[in-house]
Length: 385
Image (cartoon, rainbow, N blue to C red; front, side):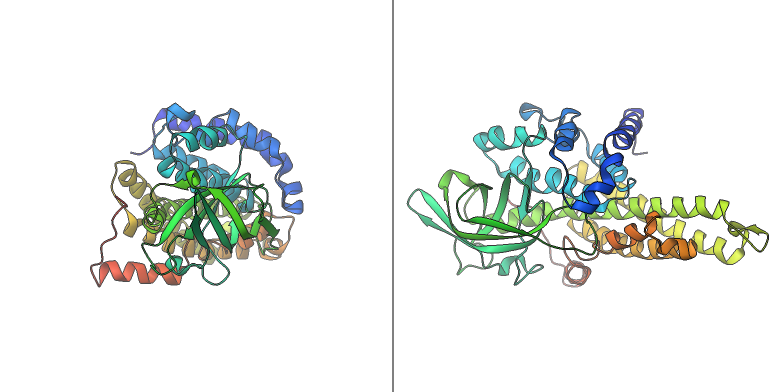
């Protein structure tokens, strides 16, 4: 219904690429928290960062189901940090370049990003408020032909080693919703500093806290219109939440597959443990949850690809898919018994990495309130004009 032969051919080639080029380095990157630059350029050479990007800047302009495959296969190599570094670059930072960047910005930043020669990060969350985007304190005050940025951001994926930053800041601190704008900031600009954070999971990615101390950037680095930053951010949340939902069903599916393989080999009391009714029924429950999430996410992808603004559905996906992924991975670890608790087996890392799902990209608590507003209060969220 959703995937053509071309899609499946891409899935096979990308899976082979990951096994050959990425998997041999994952343990090192998980240990060091640093992903070597060469792999970004290899992704670029293969066109993986350009799946959803315009052809005139080096992209492939493919439908969103190629993105779904990209996300699903990244989850199967069992490094949530590596996967996050790749999709945060391609679908957070680069989405703003694609949607709000002018021709100069697209030429100087989007094209090298597609080629894997530049890495980007998106800076929204702040130490004093993550979910309350409109309440951010970072400012960008106009000074002649420049803007001066002051403030800080935190929990930023690719926040330490990226080459440029897409920064949301208040151009009018007195206006909560219409006073925010989006800027492009070069990493080496004077006054930009970052600190790597030590995380429970996603160990391979560099998550950073970033400070802006009188950072002066030219007015040409304003992206889109001044004062439109909040609706720009909101309209991209649908894609980000769907991405988080797809990631969730994919890692849950991989955890289930691994547990099933283990159960087919492990014996207890003279028979394989996949013959015990209690465990068989647990697997039936897990598989049903994963399949429901996956089918829902595919249907949302189809609607988003067709141009429908799916903010409600994407919010529901992110909320439920990440919750279900945590539950399925918890149960998959249990099915392995003591081996599930060992770092030599993949479930321990998956368990840690998955826990970020209900937190990042909008906490489950905030999503529930957003969904309630749409259902109970009949609130409508519309794309930026």
